[in-house]
Length: 362
Image (cartoon, rainbow, N blue to C red; front, side):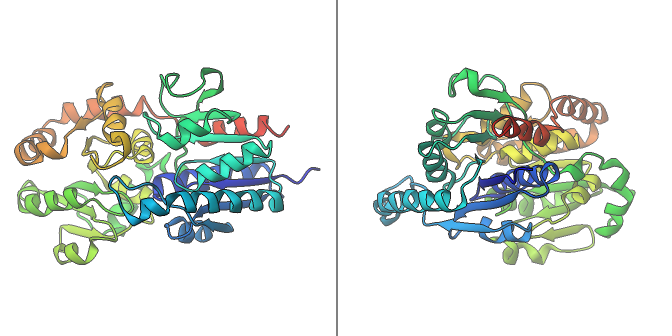
């Protein structure tokens, strides 16, 4: 029996790392004897998260271009050239059957080097509006697994496969975990629970909003699980109280989703895919600071199907309290949003992506 070898690259944020880990886990189920290697950016969170998931990782000296002229930008050509050379060396030594990229700085040079060496590559694009790296990589990629329709204007049509984004399998049946989740967080089962998600690093603007609106929200007989992010935990932990749970990072996403009645979230691609499966009423507050305004486009794709509410950061001062209060009082609206967002779920995305990878090695 052939022993297969896979290299996966994805990093910078949880939105790139967790899909890569989910794909590796599914490949491992199908090929228990396979060898796996992850490649990330040296100083990014994948260097911790991937080993925690049980996989080996090598780090490249790579970072993205900043929007303004900085020393980092002047170093970029050197970092890119060094990373390409290192990627070639990794590929030559490891001899993978397939290389899979889920986005992030390191996947660019790695997939470029793999393509040049004649090794099959798979690009997994999470967003409704692809970044420049994946657009460039798509020309040589063997398959491009996407989560949204109508990406033919960015990628070669014949390579596109609509699979959805990989999500944690423990989110498939969260309804049965509600009592356990409420107890885990020490919450009141008779109160509505608001879950606030700012992404793995946290979202400054959402944190400022919740701080300002805290008493107003609590006065509506609502309790809160507030994920403020590691960068902001020291600033906001003082709000930890009877009806407010302030956390920096969430290990058990299935529990927070199970406990939630209404969710406020950024609109990173992985979060959006998870929220479709979870099927709770969502108010998206996209980050305006990401490349090509990805998050607004991701959220808009759900709003267009009447599956969520979208509030821009610029609208929060004037709109948030009105929109939140109206949603809380309107059970019919909550049900409509839940039903519609669930229709967009793709719970078998990881298996579909792995099926495309397997086609390239059989």
